[in-house]
Image 1 (cartoon, one colour):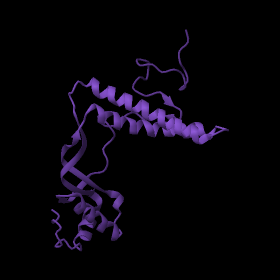
Image 2 (spheres, rainbow, N blue to C red; image 1 turned 45 degrees about the horizontal axis):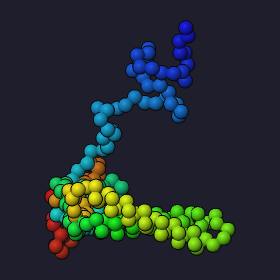
Image 3 (tube, helix red, strand yellow; image 1 turned 90 degrees about the vertical axis):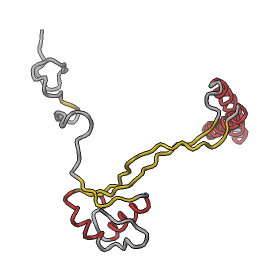
Image 4 (cartoon, rainbow, N blue to C red; image 1 turned 180 degrees about the horizontal axis):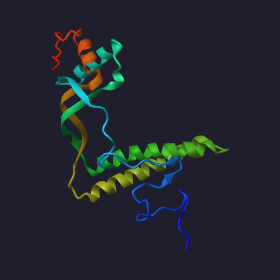
Length: 195
């Protein structure tokens, strides 16, 4: 029985040196750092302002950029997130078929164009056939999928995440510089003040 002797040999848990990871294609990999529950934390940040809407926070970062502040060290952080699902209308089997026909037509057009490129004869006919067949199959699948829900979701909607507040943060080492630059920003024009 032979034992692995080179770093490129097969590594198994429980082998001697089991606390180190096996070498990878780019050399010896580093052991995980931190608590092992995600990427390592970045540099410490400081909140330099909190705003009720995104355009206000965007204006602050834009002002920092206009004044040659290293904005790669800033972030706009939305807090108090709320999921908002806006109901767009009623969904019937007929409407599901129409929506399915539309998306199927796009897919059919793509397939038709793909086959049309390699067609020696009438390439326009190939594209049109792809479009029509895609629309028909899309309508069938859309109607069947809606009918299978059994009326549990007879409406269409669009979901979006909205933040209650937007904080502008900077790396701690740039916080004083950012505050100095923001001191020159005219916050009187409807802009909430930084805290």
